[in-house]
Structure formats: C-alpha cells, structure tokens
Length: 141
Image (cartoon, rainbow, N blue to C red; front, side, top):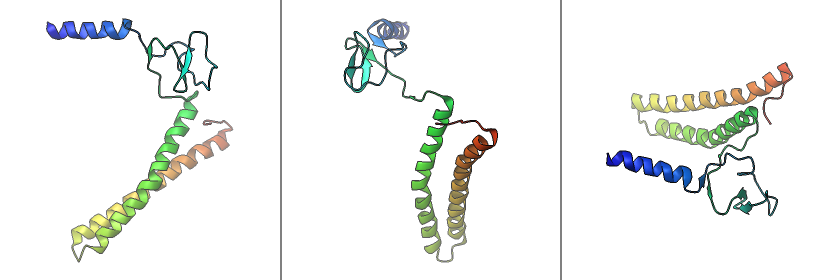
C-alpha cells in the first residue's frame, strides 16, 4: 500500500507540480537572446517559462529524412574512429600469435568483420544517395 501511495504522490507532483514536458508550441524553441514568446525567457538557448521546469525533446529534426540522415552520419563518424582501432587490434593479434592458430583466426576475423562492417556503413550512405537520385526525391537534409 505504501508503494502505491508513493507512486501516486510522485505522479501528482510530476504532473501538477510545475514540471512541463514541452508540449506547447512555444516551449523548447531555440532562441538567441530575447526572441521568445511573451512570458517566456531565453534560458540556456531554449525558450522557457522561468517558473517551470521544462523537459524538451532531444530530437530537433523537423522531418523523418533529416533524422535518418543524422543517425547515419553519427554511425559513420563513429565507424571512422572504431574501424582503424579494430584493424590495429586484429593486427596486434596476428603479430603476437606466435603460431597459435586460435589467435591467428581471431586476428583475421577482427580485421575481416571490421572491413565488412565499414563497407556496409558506406553502402548505407551511398544507397540513400543513389535512391534519391533514381527516384528524384530528397529524403534527407
């Protein structure tokens, strides 16, 4: 019974206690100074009511295509850093194998799968560009 009461009181505080989840159109708009709606002020680059706590959505993309482009670019940037590291780790396994067939296989697999993964990421980036060209539609930003 105490747990149910605690959950209920927490929900009441969250819903009616001055916490706003940024559902209104004027909230969570990016501002650069004083360009906010009346009653709102620019706090940390976002239009907010100074009397309320505002939780804004971290997704700032306006279209689904922009979101997909951002995700693919993020994965591509991570891959640019991770793939060379994996190749170095695989090469280290090959160099330190000293005839151990298991270590040689592990090193080859690491390098092979890193290159295959990077090729898939490159194809994903190129496939979107090719589909845009063939279909004549702009998917991303």
